[in-house]
Image 1: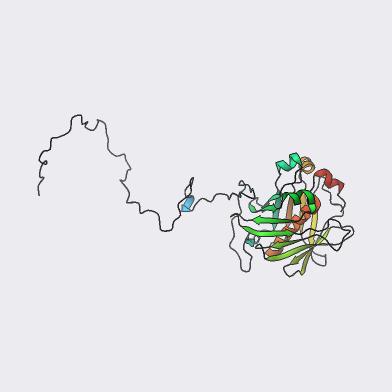
Image 2 (image 1 turned 180 degrees about the vertical axis):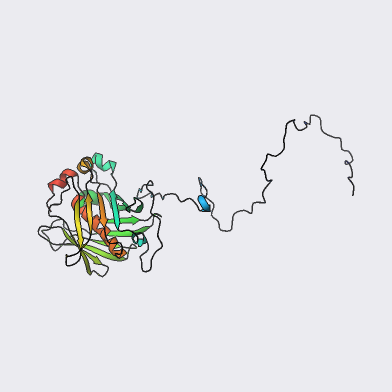
Length: 312
């Protein structure tokens, strides 16, 4: 049908109506017109939090570093990508499958440096590429830390890149002197927390710091032997990891020299742990526990105290 014309009573444009201004060129080149209607969020899709930065390359979400509000973990170093977990591997230990070296860096606590007030220890655990594998934080109360000192019992929580506690270290209160062979140092390694995978027990010796690494059944697997004089003066200190007969060298735990200033005024230490690539991941976790026990027994002091008590 034809155009019916204006409706009855149509009076034309109102007074003051302005026609389009001269120079309007229409839509710009490349404009494709309005897109189809937005279908709305999918069912069950969570609403993004405020400040969500969108997706990364390839449509994958950008993963930000976890923030540990209680542990105080830093968010600067990149995290090691999680490898696929192998069979019969405790959850969280898959990170240890593809590495043969661990670097343990204790964080400097400013309050402890300025006041001497002992705080909970915190550690970054990295691979040889500098990627963070775990973050460890001591869980202890103020009275125990400052009354028992380096001999204090503690629980060490080891977290992965998602902030999940994957390993727990339990150190009971024991004697700090070799004069009491019936109550020597030990630490229990749990992965996941609550499930023991191994133990580190101190072996009595009149002059050398010696330890035994055990599996979850408390069967002896490896030995650890340190130097007679445990004193870090301008050089690294090696604790050798050997077979049970102490004939074969399996790896080592090294206390790394950190420089005069750091050694003299802080108890923040750096360690390196070396082991075979194909070693059972449970024993790798036990070696990590041995590193923390050695740190507390011999290096959890300021530099002057450490040198005064350098002879084990």
